[in-house]
Amino acid sequence: MKTLVIGTGGREHALALALSRDPHVTEVHVAPGNPGIAAIAMLHEVDPLDGSAVAALAVSLGVDLVVVGPEAPLVAGVADDVRAAGIACFGPSREAAQLEGSKAFAKQVMAAAEVPTAMARVCETPEQAAAALDSFGPPYVVKDDALAAGKGVVVTDERQAALDHAAACDRVVIEEFLDGPEVSLFAITDGETVLPLQAAQDFKRALDGDEGPNTGGMGAYTPLDWAPDDLVTEVTRRVLVPTVVEMARRGTPFQGLLYAGLALTSRGVRVIEFNARFGDPETQALLALLRTPLSALLHGAATGTLGEVGLPQWSTDAAVAVVMAAEGYPESPRKGDPIAGVEAADALEGVDVIHAGTAIVDGELVTAGGRVLAVTATGSTLAEARNRAYAGVAEISFAGAHARTDIALAAVDGTMEG
Ligand code: AMP
Ligand code: GLY
Image (cartoon, rainbow, N blue to C red; front, top):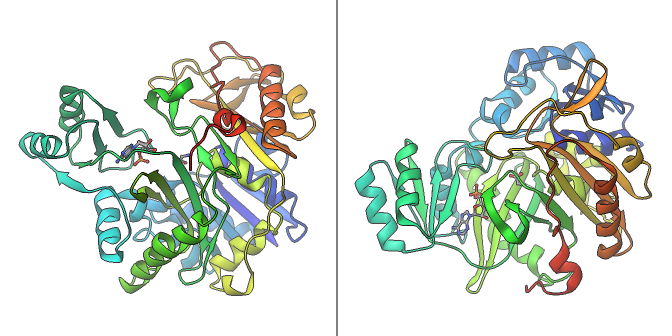
């Protein structure tokens, strides 16, 4: 099978790496890609948001499957353009991608499907926002209704900061605070069959101890030995399947990767958010352990034949991904800092260095985005995977580099509570 992955980030590097190791895949093309992906796939220039250009590229390469990685092209309808050109495409339609593109839409779907989530109100004026904040009380949760790559959310005890964020957005969703650990559970679906992946955990805050601002994700690990045994079954039954059924009922079937961001609260599982694509950096950790050929899952979803594929199979190892971010991330990441040590880290046992925001300038690898790299490692235990990932981080250096030191630490120490 010939494949084309659209995107430039860590998720796309992880997808391309898994496809390059898949015996059923003969060619891996990526557009636009990044310097890490260039080592394992053929890169092509394209504007990922330009659906006709993406479709034309797919046709000219004669690929059998296009995988649209990030949310922005999905929300822009790029998957629709690829399908209209007669090529199988993994990723939801423009309408179905609204599950991620609009938090208010996602809340409507959850209400119709009776999916457990935080109580919420959509607010368009300062008066509505103030009333909603006071009815839920602190901690306050204020979400920009527009696509914001996980960075449009403010969780704060300060009423004024909550009001200021609401005032800075056109439309916000204000909701009750959910306590308890967060879990990411992904499912691959063709709009009918729903195949859950194993659960992973992401670390959203910039600093150790879950301090600092929200980010796109600073690290991840899988599996979650501390989580309840029935977590995947329960979430599939109560969240993933009802959502896929409701999307089909509306005439906008969801095909692709349904990402449920969950809180395991004292009152049970609640959905924090849906995303319409693979999560980053959870995907780096998950794909390192996936034994089912990735192409079978993605192609099965894209062609409505997922029922023939069977449940994903996993290695019994553990995997940890630690993000190295640029100086100033997430507010204003600095670009252009030279990066050293990537090859040495990549050569360590069990380690893959996944590139996100990197570029080659004058023959030198430099930082080019907020999240620069994700050092991903597997091991026979979570402790071993974690040690290997941090050994990789220790090899890599660039000015202003920042990584959390506590990714997967509580799970290794046995202090996570499920
Ligand atoms: P979202 O973009 O909706 O995933 O929100 C980003 C992050 O904000 C989540 O991963 C949580 O850490 C936090 N968050 C969002 N909604 C809530 C909530 N209702 N209660 C507590 N934390 C939340
Ligand atoms: N890891 C969080 C996200 O991909 O949105």
